[in-house]
Image (tube, rainbow, N blue to C red; front, side, top):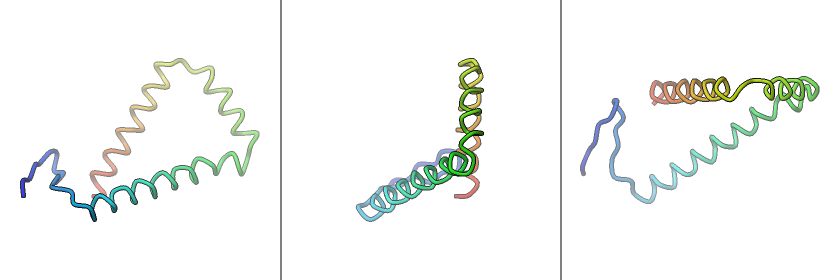
Length: 82
């Protein structure tokens, strides 16, 4: 089995069972994301609307920087956890 090392991540051949586990974990992660994203609109819809109005006033560059930071923090946390 060939092995590739990239930033301490171990990537190997994926068989059918591992492929199923991967898709299952991705589905679980997406479901959890939807639950977390729905908390604020459920608890306080007015605050959620205010946040959306404020977000509309932020320029594109700032939104991109926030998105990039979010992706980097998430990636780093995944590396640490795994």
